[in-house]
Image 1 (cartoon, rainbow, N blue to C red):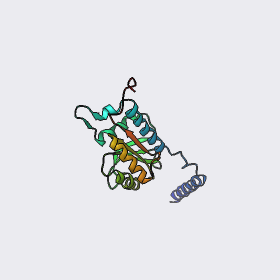
Image 2: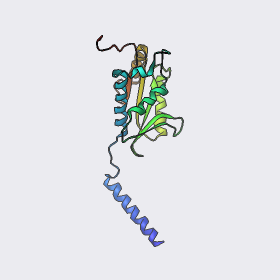
Image 3: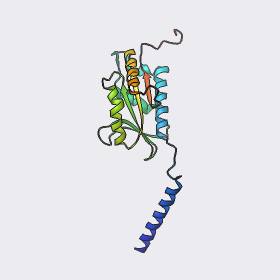
Image 4: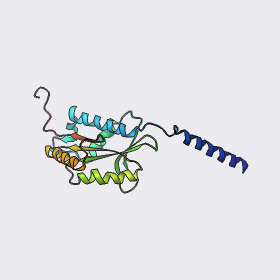
Length: 185
């Protein structure tokens, strides 16, 4: 019993020292920056490297579903030290992705199609529920626009919400009607 009490006392002393120094728990937050960087890389691939062709089916003339676009994030996540998990459901529904670097550094990544009639609700309210369920305050929202009207809708929604210059909101122009070849531009 004395040996166990001694171990407990030493563990408590060590925990106190680690807490006092603060350095033990100080690590740079990586998940949010990594998620923003990868979302912007996905944006670049879709807008400038003909990636829009992958998510605009010429045969059916229909844009891809949100689920298909979500899967592309996994492809641009290669080689990251930040863990990416899909459809994580920690309560009240699954978020599209969580990006985490250990238990103390987690961000959610949520995709939205601009044509969704509940776009504002999804940005403002739905993501807040996911943040609480995942014990974080960090989020990245990726909005995919397939039409000019989608782009106008997103501008209006982001203006109404006061988020027009938010670094953590990435709007992707996935239109297939506004991307001429360089020889025609």
